[in-house]
Length: 268
Image (cartoon, rainbow, N blue to C red; front, side):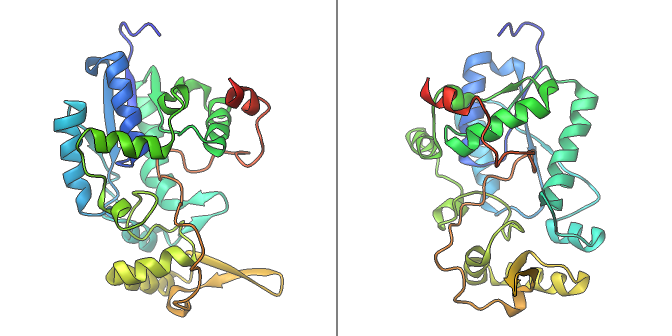
């Protein structure tokens, strides 16, 4: 890629994959050509401040630019004001606080290329292929896929760089999403109940206020709301806590349908 007079943005979520994708982009294209942007939601773990500072000082050697939708102080604040939690293909908080913010910045700043932290894993490669089809104007760069790096590889690389991974990973969560991610399942929310009881109680309260829920369950063949304050503490014990990193994409259409080029990429 000719980087002369090019403006590249790396979307940094404070997850391990976006962190290594950003690091590799800076090394390849130079820090003067790359803008690093983080979207604040007001609901991240407090340890994110430490992690971001260490990334700036020990890994990127460049400041991370923080953007926030000033209408909302947190995810719960957004839910109260918009009276919605999830929609059919994703979470309203991601769509409003990250995806739409990305669209606004794209229009305003006219980035030449955008960097995304999809890892080298079948599902993620498929999402990247679909994303490239749906948003070709982003001219996307996928450093981890290009270098065949998985999330585990990224975790090991951070350790080698001497940077402690974010606290949510250390607590056993597979992603560094907001504390109390609305995309989590029963097992996830029961872990939040133990690790962050105040977060659990606040989400349970706002669910009742707006009569919407994070969770659904099937009863007699119908999908119905499952309120957190009725969730059995033993449910979801065998569920994975891997929600997918919450970045600037939210829904990617047809990402559950195998792209015709997927196998070709995996086999090369």
